[in-house]
Amino acid sequence: MIVIPSIDLLRGKCVRLFQGDPSQVREYYQDPEEAVKLFQSQGASMLHIVDLDAALGLGDNLNVINRIIKSVKIGTQVGGGIRSMERAEQLLNLGVYRIVFGTACIRMPELVSEASSIFGKDRVAAAIDVRNGSPTIEGWKSKLSLEYVEVAKKLENLGVGTIIFTSVNADGTLRGPALIDVKRLVRSLSIPVIASGGIRDLDDIRELAKIGVQGVIVGTALYEKRFTLAEAMRVARTC
Image (cartoon, rainbow, N blue to C red; front, side, top):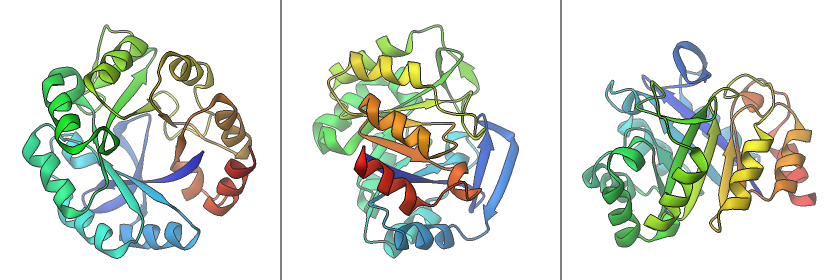
């Protein structure tokens, strides 16, 4: 299992949201490249970058993303507001390894299928952001009357290579991940699952490794210094 630091970008800065709420934002770095350098120095093999402005329809952080990609020698996966083939190609041309579709998975499944076919399934992931058991879209503002496992199965059939599951209820709270929901998803799919949301300590890393996720995305716990990335990676390797 790999441990992936999260870099959430809002107005060019590195921030964290509480439960996906843009009115509850905490800034950690004015220059996101400082966080990137720290994580890379601790051995990160992948970065998870979320363009919150793009997800919320408030512009984008393409310039910042471009600078980050040019400054690292590790892989990046980027999500937030990718709702066209043009934007997907733009990010991949910048050097992004994997693009992460969110709202488009529900609103434009044909786009996700086409991207998987053109770029390869390993380079296309689908984000399933779940609040109270149901997927949310459009910057976590709209809750759908759909079952998240069934949505994931449909995306697997569309050719998506990876599912990124986030518990919106837990995200940014340091209250622990949604282990039961993650376990159910892992058991229902044949493609890799990456878990996100609520990680608070190294025991959470151990529990997710036991479930069988391919990776875990960690944000607030790293920024609040609950543990270091190097410590989390050591735990992940030994599970």
